[in-house]
Length: 196
Image 1 (cartoon, rainbow, N blue to C red):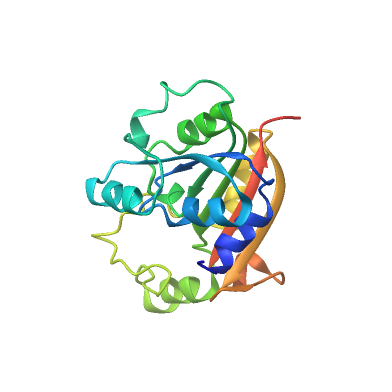
Image 2 (cartoon, one colour):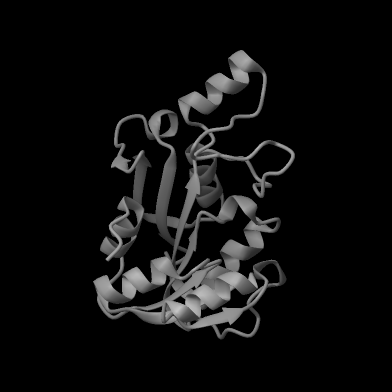
């Protein structure tokens, strides 16, 4: 069983037997982990054909859909939790994708790289160049990341839309980072809802 720290944190937020939709699920590793660890049922959504084949090989139910075109075919509140892991920063229509997540599920979980991490800030401030690191391995011209944002930016995004944050975890090199997370964290995980 996979023991990635972010997978374990996500699993700790999900009730046993929950119905889960994993958007941009890649090879299905997260959903397979949640199925084993929490007994969840659900589907992955992926657009890449090679990843879809890997999902099937991993025993994950997968639907081929381009997230940018929306999830209109999925009924309201069909899932307990909708996950978007390390993909939010690559979405062109961020607001619409998050709104759709909360329409089809009662809660949403997102994970994203924190562009406010001190080493990224230093690369920009002292080197004058966009950051490249283990967490952000792309050059500015070939990155899939279209939105560069920080933990503070995401929290302001949620507050402006009255999304209620239920849980937050921040990691650096697989270790939870509770102290100065916007400065010292590389990966942020949020569980939130649109319900009052």
